[in-house]
Length: 251
Image 1 (spheres, rainbow, N blue to C red):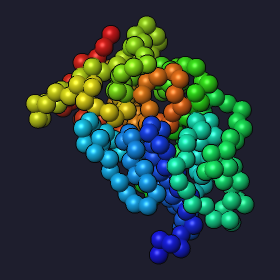
Image 2 (tube, one colour):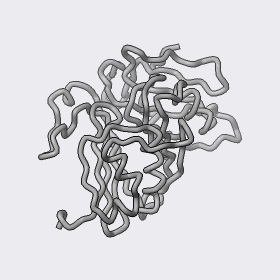
Image 3 (cartoon, helix red, strand yellow):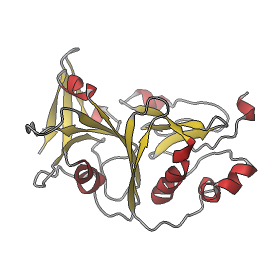
Image 4 (cartoon, rainbow, N blue to C red):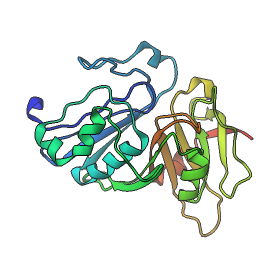
């Protein structure tokens, strides 16, 4: 029965959007998505009409409970606004900082940005999770993600007001995607049609470079002022995906 589960749930208004839950099996799930006002009410699941207009993304990963303490610190850095939550008294005692965060109380942290490594439950799929505060004062992609991965990035993050231009003159460049063309369907998707927030690493094709790429899925646009969560995972499938489409980037 769902009602018997000991679970911890968060739902974030507008951007920085997602939900997570854990139960007695010591496993749980975490969803990061790009849809504003999804399930704005706590009473039922609601998909907003505005979510049909533009492209969106969902990422759901299963995690072991051992990562929960690290995730709490990630939440403390980004300080999302929790819309609704349930946490039992026993869990409050075990994770007091989580209880504070779910009540939208500040939890002190010594850093403005942080990255953790995780593996999904059972399949052990490798993930990196990035979190930044609004006080970080830098671009997460150009100043945090690209240097950490040691790879250049092409980003698609709903480039509208307050967005950042491409950063070309760096050791690892970060370029904004203007449009993508999907050869299999003959479809062109403009940046203004895609509300999802994602990035892919760009191979330099050096002989010593691995053949895989990283996919980055986040919950905020490429802006300095915003707090942000981003999950990045490594997958050889990206190379196959990249051969079926082409990107027009803004220089």
